[in-house]
Length: 162
Image (tube, rainbow, N blue to C red):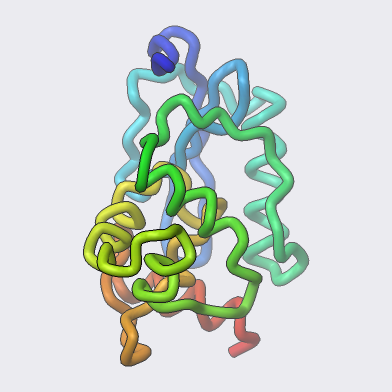
């Protein structure tokens, strides 16, 4: 599958409690969420229906009013194969809970691929929406997170009511 052309993309920025994120959408759905303010050449269009829905649902999530996202996602920017399996699995980890990289590796059928799970989490184009922040090291420490460990800790604290 090919990724959409930049001329087909729209973006908006959303101010979250710990960061400003850029949300990018195509004509098919939400394509990416970036903490780096990366727009992929998209045109700013906060009035896009997909971006309005994402902005609303992110606001509800940060206000503690939403536990699952219900957004049309454009997965053309997502990886296939093992990383794709990891990303699809991440969506099944319930709000307020965590799993270890090892548990995820087992769940997606490759128990020895613990580091590959970490790489797949790091390459997740839809953090928060596809909750890679819910994956921790086996000893319970945070591991890594593209937006930084402070944001990961804050997301986990939000979900655990702290």
